[in-house]
Picture 1 (cartoon, helix red, strand yellow):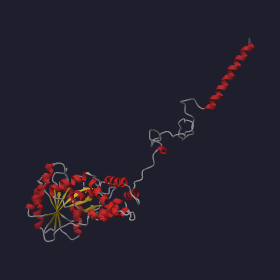
Picture 2 (picture 1 turned 30 degrees about the horizontal axis):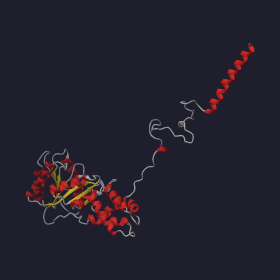
Picture 3 (picture 1 turned 135 degrees about the vertical axis):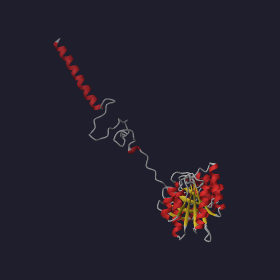
Picture 4 (picture 1 turned 90 degrees about the vertical axis):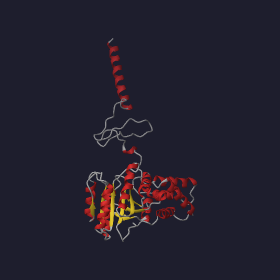
Length: 357
């Protein structure tokens, strides 16, 4: 009996030892993490034939961000010029021409302008000339060279500045006043933006910096009345140029646009002639810029565009659409925050910037 009991105990012990050895060979039990070295990242169990995947980590070391090894490669922003060369090569297909048109539309050139531009390039394409050169030449031809402000020298010249809120009207006016001042012009500024808080103070700062005279009234005054007084004052003081600031407004609001037209009429009733009406257009505005340009042109006969905020990533392709559809040229471009950062528009330099050439 004792022998049987001893044998039974021995069998049980051997069974336990065997189980422990087998378990050690097969790995840890399911759901239990394997031990790791201090500071290392635990790995998930893997299926045969696969590689271990690091646990998601956040900036703090734990959390939900995807591990760097699983992220897609960072997209490299490809220049428009490089894309054109890839598409056209030496024997472009019909699909390639369609894709070129789509690429231009995505660059805010506008559907109509993009289509016309592609047709002109297609007609000249010979397989030998760099297609980027052809596109550049057509862009320059479309934009033209009528970029000089048309201001008389034998009487008071008047420039009216319009645009939506946030486009950079006040900044542009300050820079333009300084630019004209450097050319020897005596400049007066009219603050007809009488509804925006601190608009007068902001324009006053720019007037001081540019060495210009400011004509303003109390907040809430009639914008036309300010313009009338400014024409009278500038004429009496022998100023060369009067720049009329107007309230930023939504181009979709008819009463506001009507008021803008009224400011122009009152300015001329005071004995002045509006020689230039400049639309300040944010280079980042996209296709909405066409609607803005059309609405302001209908209301006050826009004669030129000032393209602002060209110091950032925006390349201002929208001006091609504005030029194609409305015939309005770009005359000035803002390239920075300094008072000197307003330049006469150069269509060749613009084309180079747009194409990345």
